[in-house]
Amino acid sequence: MKDTGDQPTRKLIRILVADDHKIVADAICTLLETTGCMEVVHRVYSPEDIADSIQLHQPDIVLCDLEMPGGDPLEACAKALQHCPDVKIVILTAYPTDAHIARAMKLPVMGFMTKHEPAETVVDGLLAISSGHEVYSDEVRDRMIDGQSDRIRESKILKLSPREITIVRLVAQGMTSTQIAETVFRSPKTVDNQISSAFAKTGCANRVELSRWAIREGLIQP
Image (cartoon, rainbow, N blue to C red; front, top):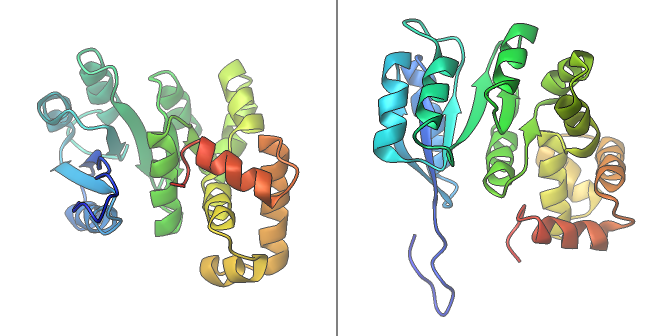
């Protein structure tokens, strides 16, 4: 990323993408690299290459599918974490089964999103994860709460969903509910409901406090 004026150059978030469907992996990589704040350092199409690739490229985040023939992606990630403990593992799958979620929580992962999410929601989720937050798609969170795990209950109550993260980021950019609704293709009422949910989860009383919270937590640059 080029430096502009007196603004310091921001460090790109280094991401490794693991998905056995090449067309999907390539589309994800193209999406991430158009953000201007992320760099895809490598893409992996087979589970057997995941551990070595993580150790070789040392990404900040591994965005990993779970349904990959030829091995177990979670076992490969767990192996890599023994040597690269600071790498954040994020699941992106079309099949968020109870078994997958339970195994992922034991790894542990920093995020678990589904491929049903809009592209911008996945991007916003990765930005939040890069700042130290855990992010789960609504479908995953609904399944997690049934697991009766202390970590799961905490995540269900306190963490924003990927869609709420998108809404919070847009609020922090000064958008009105109508403008946000047009951006995310939802009704203003739905947007207002998600903002209210974000208020409750973050302890913020209004949009100004929510915007300051988003900046403080690294969800958006000041």
